[in-house]
Image 1: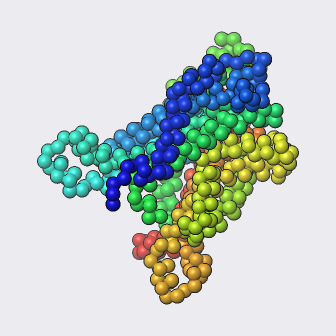
Image 2: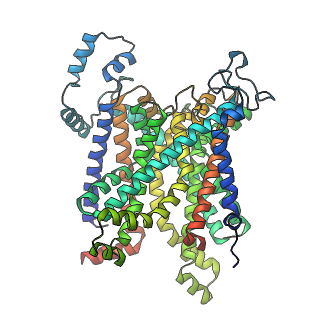
Image 3: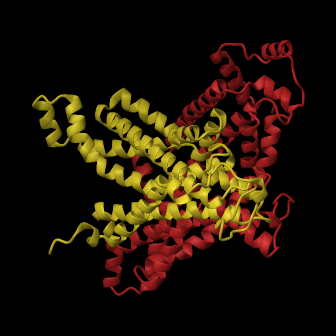
Length: 277
Length: 317
């Protein structure tokens, strides 16, 4: 087969990678897109205006432009989601590798804690943690991290266990390789691809959980623009100003769809097993 | 599962419960709010410093952490979860009153989920890579990606504001209350479950005995109804049990949107008013229910799957 360009070979991945990039760029260049419109300041004379040429998504109860807030909201949502996925990815992978490689008491302690977290409905604890720590985006990230790392730790551990006694690992031990070297050189590279796929497919879901916490009032605090919190604002005006709920929700939905598709297509590329299906 | 397995599971559950109770207690202990002040404020009083100090001593809040935890845990074992600061009622009564509405909501949405996802999943597996499969997969993708709080708001917008068919606030106590919250919950659950039904049926369809039966000329519908479907339902029961659990926790968002008088709504208001006894009681109740459901699902395997029964029997011999 003639070698084709990677992006031409996987058109679905390419399309959604471009879309994801566009969302990220929109977040980065929010000030350029929105001009001098401020996401936190509005004029009360312009409160609750229908979508028009001037305010294409309308304005909210404080007279703030919803389009501006949605674009700036992408900054909050994307940053928080990437940090969250990064934390559980690193934490889960490290704990899983340690647990699987060393075994014994370390394994028992880490896995019992993980069991405890899993034998429990995640969102309940996340709400409790976020609520008790106080409403803020960092606390919401901590709350979801606390309940989400065990899934990653278990996955990493199971993969380490599979190769723990493989010949090449035994050979490394016998020839005197230091433990950190084995962990980084042999364990990590074997675990990483599947972990990365899992993280990529989880981005959309994590984004929704963060937005849900903000929606309940345990995440972003007003007036900072965040999609979940904007929906919460709009909820009280659903009869008189439906645009306040439609557009922030649409932003979450579109972003989640793009990142879910991106994650799924990445999995299809990297994991040929699933293709048989 | 033999009796020994069940006992060891119960023991594990006990350890997990102790862990969870410790964690929630620790969290409320280190949290920034002051329970005494919050209690007074919730009752509309502005206490002075001396009063706060006296109440603090009375409630045992000056004792060492472990002593406080031990006392609270013992009381919980006796069924006394303390008093809610913000609502001035025993926590047990509050939780008990809200349990039934949440269970109703959960069961109704699960019924919708089963009715929708089992036929769709089977159809999509049987007609794999045909138009109907693509439609079903597209729908499940849509269902998984739509945030349920937004879906709920859109449903309100459509059915309550535009069409004026249903009430915006679901707390009148009639059946109408249940419809929109249950549909909202069922939306994303059905999407996930349809995918799982499809995968389970596909697994069975690709197994050797199906190919063998086809080769022997057994009719396709016969294989499907008598062999494939009963066998593929097994893994789904586990997932069904797990979804009951995540439902119990996941109802809070939907309950808040529809002002539905359930446990989740109570928990959210407890957290916003720093009502620690109520939060702790809620977390413990939910975890007990969740673990009990999972245990029942595991035990039910013995009755449904002959392989499990045979395995445990032979082990005992």
